[in-house]
Length: 188
Image (cartoon, rainbow, N blue to C red):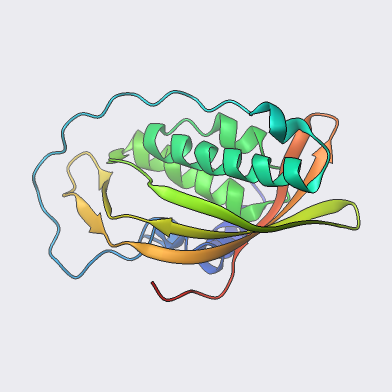
């Protein structure tokens, strides 16, 4: 893929997806506590998210509903390694989206796992600009665990709060994320 380097660099700078560089996963900084080697209890296989009817409307409210759905797609990709839904909800222009999907796939192929990706987004603005909508969110997470490979220990990720900015376009195939970035970090 010709944009792999660009996607990985964008992922590091955007959304703190520094996991692509071998540091931390998309959800936040690992705590200073040493990782535990205890195995996680098997979690049920999550259901694939479906686009809610309100997310099909070409409006600021429809754009906001789609962004909430996109967080469910990110969670599904992280916890299953199946990034098809995430990629279908974004364009190739969204380097961050492509990088997250690739990271999730590689992590699961190596036997890694997320216990969960407990992101709780609140849409703060949704407005039309040019030929797309801009949606901003305030996102909080609770702590969770992940491991990079089957033989790796579980790493605890501390709770975080952050702001994201989405640019999404309503296409013939529905809403698509064309750009995703993390805004200035917000103290918890």
